[in-house]
Amino acid sequence: MKKSLWMLLLLIVIVGVFAAGCAAEEPAPAPEPATEGEAPEEPAEPAVEFPEMNLNMSVSTSDTSSWYKGGEYFGELLSERTGGKVTVTVYANEQLSSGSQTKGIEQLQTGVTDLSFHSTIIYSILAPEFGVISLPWLLPNEEAADAALAGAGGDAINEILLANNVMPLGFGENGFRQITNNVREIKTPADMEGLKIRIPGINMYIDLYKELGADPTSMNFSEVFTSLQQGTIDGQENPLSIITTSKLYEVQKYISLWNYSYDPIALGMNKDLFDSMSPELQAIFVEAGQEATEYQKQLNREEGAAAVELLEGEGMVVTALTDEEIAVFQEKMIPVYEKYEEIIGKELIDAFRE
Image (cartoon, rainbow, N blue to C red; front, top):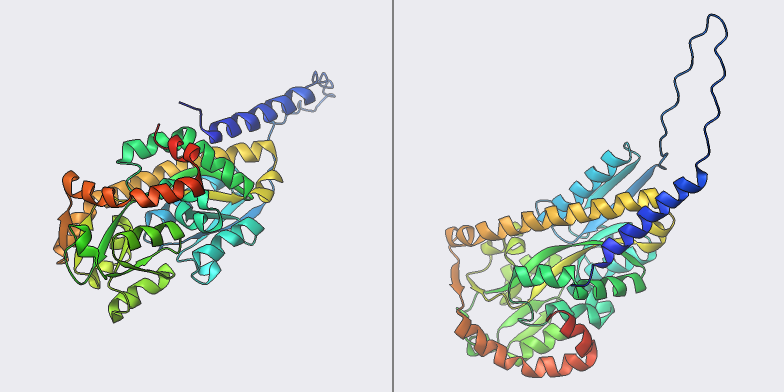
C-alpha cells in the first residue's frame, strides 16, 4: 500500500531539522578556567525557541461534538510541545463564517482562519474531485475507509488539498451518513418518492437523491433544526454523531441506517502559514495533527456505537436496512457513477476501491 502523504511530509521536515542541526554543529570551545573564588558556569541546555502563535480554528459542529473535542486536543498537544508558545482557540458552529461551511473553507484558503475541520463533502463544492470519497456505497465499512485514506486514495486527496492552499494534517471522520424524516419509514427507493430532504450543496448528492425520487434541498446546517421543526423540509441526512449532538431526534421521527456515504473530515491548515514555520515547528504540527485526528475518530466511533440506543430511547423509529435492501438502492446509482466517473476520473475512483 502506498505510504500516505503525511508520513512523507513528516519525514521531510524531520530530515530538514536533522540537516540544519548537522550543518550548524561545531566543536564546542573549551570552557575558560574559573578564576579563584568563582564556581564554573553550568553549560546551557540547548533549546528551540518557538514564536508565540495564537491561532483560530473553525469547526462546523457544536462544542459537544467530537470535532470540537478533537480540535481542543490538537491545541493541547501544540501548547504542550511548544512550551505554551502555540495556542489554538476552537470556534464551534462555523461562528467565524456566519454559519457557512463553504465560506469557512474559503477563509482557511486565504488565511482569515488558521485551521479547520471540514468535511470533504464541503470541499467538493470547490473542487468536485473531493466528492470521490462520498460516492454512494463506494466504501462499505470503517475498515475499508481507514485503508483507503491511509493509502493511495488519501494521498490523492492530500495532493488536491495542497493544490488548494490547504496543508493536510490528518483525516478524522464524520462517519457514515444516515437518513431521517418525519413522513415514513424508508426501506425501498419508492419510500423516498417526493420527500424534501436537506443535503449539503454538492451536485453529486443532488443527482443521487433525484435518482431515488426525492426532492433534494441545499441549506446551511445551522438552519436545519428550525427547518425540520417548521416543516420546511421533511428530512435530512447526516452521521449518527451529528444527529445526536444536534438533537435532531427532537424534530424527526424516522431514521434509516443504510451507510450510504462515508464522510471524512480533513484537519487543514492554511498552507502559507505552515510554510512560514520552521522545520521543527512543522514537525510538531504534523505529529500533533495525526494524534488529534485519531483521537477524534475514536470519539466519533464511540458516539456512533451508543447513538442507536439513544435515538430509540428518544422515540425514533430506527430501521436498519439489510444487504439485500441496500442492493436495490445501489442498482439505482448506476447513472450517478457513469456521470461522475467522467467528472471525478476513473483513476481517482479506483484509488478508493483498492
